[in-house]
Amino acid sequence: MTTPKRNLSNIWTNVGARFLPFADAASDQLPLGRLLRLSLFQVSVGMALALVTGVLNRVMIVELFVPAWLVALMVALPLAFAPFRALIGHKSDTHRSALGWRRSPYIWLGSLLQFGGLAIMPFALLILSGDTHGPAWIGHASAALAFLLVGAGLHTTQTAGLALATDLAPADARPRVVALLYVMLLAGMGASAVVFGALLSNFDQLKLIQVVQGAAVATVVLNVIALWKQERRNPSLTAAREVPSFSEAWRGLAAQPGAKRLLIAVGLGAAAFSMQDVLLEPYGGEILSLSVSETTMLTALFAGGSLIGFAVAARRLTRGGDPYRLAAFGALAGVFAFSAIIFAEPFESPLLFRIGAALVGFGGGLFSVCTLTAIMAFAKGASSGIALGAWGAVQATAAGVAIAMGGAIRDIVSALAGSGALGPALNTPAAGYSAVYHIEILLLFATIAAIGPLARYARHRHSPPQEQFGLSAFPG
Image 1: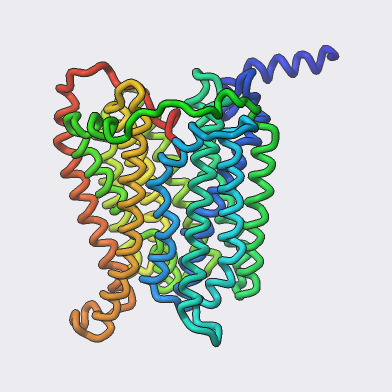
Image 2 (image 1 turned 120 degrees about the horizontal axis):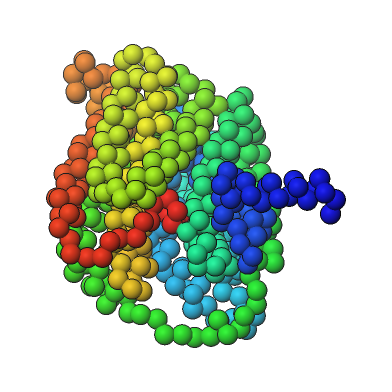
């Protein structure tokens, strides 16, 4: 190597770990290039989430005239598989294979499921919208199947992919590796939202088919690149092994003081931040007259707000901040967020609406990181899996139920308002949306009430100092 090249290499070596993002996540066992390639599976998951929760909900309600309750139910279907993530991880841990691969079969299976769901989804949506001469139940069944396949695929891929990353990285680098993978998920959501918004700026049904099926192809391409030569064959790891009893682990977690109350707070907060998932973009399109491209950009604002929330949580938690107080602050930020969204309609202010959307992401991200940090404090020895599994199951179930209820409440209140049953003051197109946002504010106040006693009790817990978890070990 020549002297100038050697000097430049020394400069990057000395500077990189301090200034380059996640440069310290790389190791001899998992170099940065290989790690970035592996993280592409998170980009594919983020792309699917941006499409399902950020684009299709608005298109189905505003452009395809599908009832909001049905859209909410369809978008909630992928979350039905989220509680099974712990089971998927357990199966990949104990997978029997003569080839010696534990994670790769599940990543590939998830990729195929995700591809299949996205491939049939646009045609299912067109049938669901009534643009056909066949029976209506075919559209309902095919759309439900498409969303279920996408949900099963992305949860399977993400769970096994994160487990593979943990296997490949050395113990001291695993928190930073998981952090990089989670940020790549949000980067995938944000970038995909921008691309989808640009491609659908002039909406028509043919363009929708091309975009969704292009996402299906991109999913397989990204996941093949991510998985290529990552997992080494090791038949000794695919033999049968003893696993702890789930019932015993659950009883041990639930018996700890404050654990049940924390899970209740997690459920309330998840429902509060998720009920608007299928309504935010239709609200912007129907009430504020924003285009498909403009409302799709809300996903990018939401992801940006979430990243800021993660950064604030990581900074405060690593400095000894109380996770319960920070989680309550995230819920309070959500109150201001939904208030801004509500007032965007009478003020006719798209800017206020966008600020509210970004604050929803900030509050939800801060709340999620801090409650996960708090649940990790209840983990004893090898019980961290059951703690994370309980957190994920409660959050996913509450979010799925809230999403489905949000669409139904919007339709019911809008019908009552349109008929004049609620009086002339509420006879507006925004009445149904506003009702959902007000319910979310009430749920956030209930969340704060549930967290309050935990913040006081945490001061007097006679337990070892909890690990600084924060963003650096936040799983996707």
